[in-house]
Image (cartoon, rainbow, N blue to C red; front, top):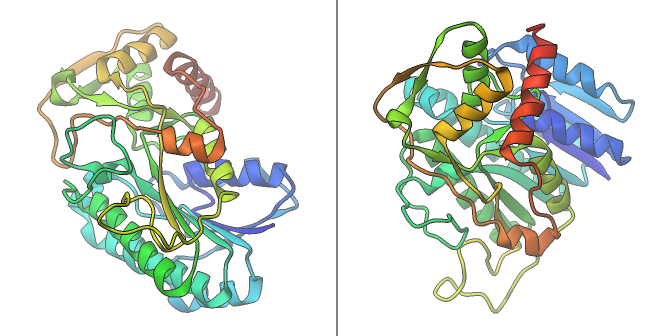
Length: 334
């Protein structure tokens, strides 16, 4: 297969590319290598791939004409769309960046898929779209109409936009709601990275909601396995489906949505303890209130993903934290 992977220099994107090229696929990656976080880490991820079946095109998905030309010249079989402006808190500070990338850029990808008859579009959604939901575990059959950040709202919009294109143009689309992904080559703006760096440097870490938070931490290896497997599960039309009786995660159109999480959330303090134990250092802690855009708990129901792919996450928190810290110490000479 010939794949387009957007966000190819990103945390999840680079890992997906690495998995796909290892199994013999041809990959074109695109990334604008923006400075939302350290670009040296992004280039290091790309260097790690270093495979003859992979090439990077450096461009912004919000560049409509360049995206159109790329799709027309390459004839992709499948698209895995992972490029986005990430981060809940940054969406409060710089909302327009999210409109440019997550709405305009996403529309450009949909248009590219429509005009070149792509076999399957797999795209990144987020667990953040569950917003104010209290029922756990979060299931794709749940309503997700009350996001608490603009980032989450853009991801909800992506699912709605995908459905309209699946309905109108018969494009098979699959959305993946990622749950707190962590592991080697991870993002510096996320808690595992921040906690590890600050503990090693003797700095104080901030503990939101006084430690009373739960997260469904999901290791990158499990996420990648889920993404690659779901790319082979192309949704079909279901003429018997109705909005009144069907789940929001399926449709009469060739459309599907899945959670990708570990399915076993742990308390934030338990995660901090796992890092402390692996480093052999007790963290200096600053307990503070819940921050804007945060949610109390994430917890993924992954049964439908297992039914579709036969895969359930395998990497536990203790093992995953140890793997991440080994990478961190090696990469940063710590």
